[in-house]
Image 1 (spheres, rainbow, N blue to C red):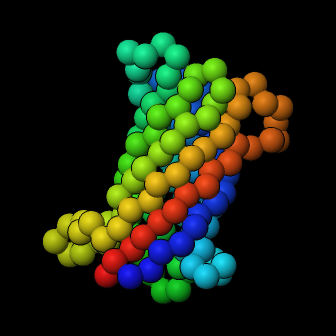
Image 2: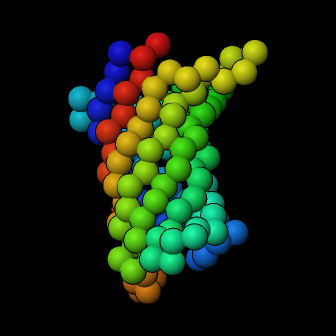
Length: 130
């Protein structure tokens, strides 16, 4: 089993039906071991003060063919502050499909109307058991 911290950039979508992104690294004993990149899609929410959506991404160690893992999850946060939480399952691709082998969970902060090129950020914890 491996576990550690993750951190990087988080850019929320511009609204429902739009796409944003997350990019960063997973660290094991303070060493980056996986590059993380994901597409964030915002879904329409019945909560007028909330933003929510899906996360679809990959983890790659940069060695050999990739990606090494597929990451799928969801995010939920405040419309007013751009802060929220996210969680995802880590899957290992196999010839017969995706096998769940781990998870990620964290927080993000992407304040609305922040001047470009300022990016939002995320922090997380992760575990992979395989």
